[in-house]
Length: 81
Image (cartoon, rainbow, N blue to C red; front, side, top):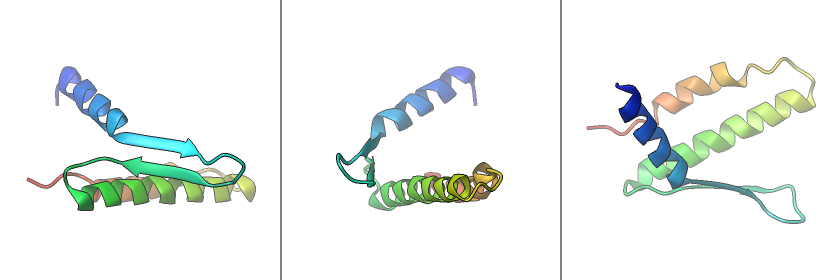
């Protein structure tokens, strides 16, 4: 993939993703817009899972290895031809 194509893909991803804290709570809202409802669900759930895993590891003072564990989840979120 060319750097230009990669940048366009990342920009499209960023504009489809909304993450925000719900005021006066410990809740984080994660939304992903896609014409494919299954893809939108998988992306939002994967981001949420990785966030929760990272938060747990940081809270428990364990080494932060969340990226390795989450990489396999991201592979399932690729759009299928």
